[in-house]
Image (tube, rainbow, N blue to C red; front, side, top):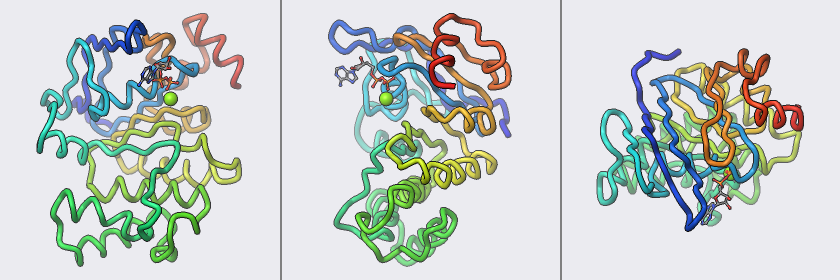
Amino acid sequence: MTTGEPLIVLDSVNKWFGPLHVLDDVSLSVARGEVVVVIGPSGSGKSTLCRTINRLEPINSGTITFDGRPLPAEGKKLAQLRSEVGMVFQSFNLFAHKTILENVTLGPIKVRKEKPAATRERALALLDRVGIANQADKFPAQLSGGQQQRVAIARALAMQPKALLFDEPTSALDPEMVGEVLEVMTSLARDGMTMVVVTHEMGFARHAANRVIFMADGKLVEDAPPAEFFANPRSERARDFLSKIL
Ligand code: ADP
Ligand code: MG
C-alpha cells in the first residue's frame, strides 16, 4: 500500500566505527506505506542502518532525509524526529518500574505534551489492538516476552509515528511467541504503516514486505521484491546466506 512518495531517503551514506567501514555508500529510498525487510549476516551493518535513520548514530558522509527534511542533529527537532520514527528493539526496553499502561502513556505525555486522560484512552485502545488490554496495570516482568514486545510496539505507536523501525524484534523470544508479534507487525503493515524491519523471519519477509534488502559488509548488495529475491538472488553472498538460514 505505497504511494510512491519517499518518506525515508538515504543517499550515499557512509559510516565508520574507527577503521571499520560499517555503512559503505548506502543509498535507499523507502516510500510512504512501504515495508522494507533488511536481512544479512551478523555484523553487516543492519542495526547501524536502522539507528542512523532516527539519528541514534550520526553518519560521516552522505545525506538522510525524513519526510522531505534532512535529519536534525540536536534539540527539539531531533526529539520530534525520534517521535516520528518509532523504534522497536530486540530487547523490548520497557521501563521496569512503570506499569504497562504507563509505559505506553509516558512518551505522549512527556514528549508530546498530551493530556493524560486522552492519552490513557488511546493507550488502552492500542493495548487492545496488540491484544493485551487486560494487562494494563501489570509490570513488564509479569508479562511474557511476546507480550512485552507487543507493549513495546504499542508504546511506539502511541507517539503516532510516521514510520517504525524494527531491529530483530523477535530474536529474543521463545519460539512459541514469535508468531503473536509477527501477527501484530503484519497487521500494521496491512494498515499502511511505513516499516523498516531487520529480521531473520523469512516468512514475514515473503508475506509482508514490499522489498527485501540484503546487506553484507556494510554494503547494500540486493534490493528486490521478496518473490524475486527468494526465487533468484543475484549475488553469491545472498545465495550463500539463504542456503544457511532456509
Ligand atoms: P548487524 O546488526 O548487521 O549485526 P551492526 O550494525 O550491529 O551489524 O554492526 C556492524 C559492525 O559495526 C559490526 O562489526 C559491529 O561490531 C560494529 N559496531 C556496531 N556498533 C559499534 C560501535 N558502537 N562501536 C564500534 N563498532 C561497532
Ligand atoms: Mg543487529
